[in-house]
Length: 265
Image 1 (cartoon, rainbow, N blue to C red):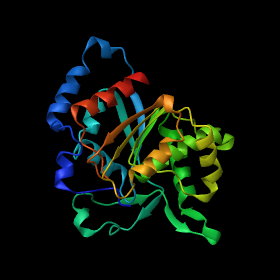
Image 2: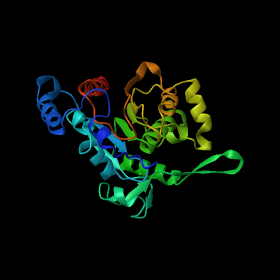
Image 3: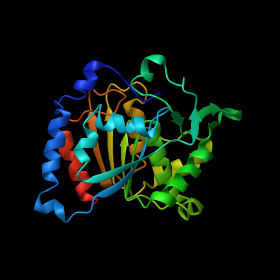
């Protein structure tokens, strides 16, 4: 999954509510950041994980230039971006996408089928080690944000930190997660942890955003991931007309996003 969709209609109106222009959202939230109520709030630090075969820089572009999600939280949080652990060639994306999303390109893993129907994530260990080093050098972080494969990374890291004592001793669990259009890990070595989280959901406050028209990660797959999270802490933004892309949020969705972040400050 490349994790990008370039439908012009979806880029402008990914949901039934109309998204605000980027410059207006940026201006409004810059004003909000100067109010007395916000001056005493600590800005959250969020580590962001990009989608399959993109990069941290390209995810920044998706959040701030191609959608208003980044601007909608800019006064509440500082975003940091990390690249996947496996670098690809500069021709990893179709030529039609390279102008919009220039190289370098990275992936967190590449899934393949192993013996007996198992699923193996090649390059996973390198990616986990890279994230571990990044957090040790640049952390701590309050939460994670991930889109598509990056959302799966964010969920998997949270799962490992909360249920694997060895991993938890090296990588602290986040206090919250923002998960966009993502699914559960299919890596066979994670199957017991995933089953355990389905039986005893993770106490991780999470905001999950996904679209009804997503054919790369259909809504049912994202809902399966949501079932591993304690429903008491889950907030959901479902965009009936949304595809597989970082969404441009309408006023109601922006309000949900901002209320969620304020609740975990």
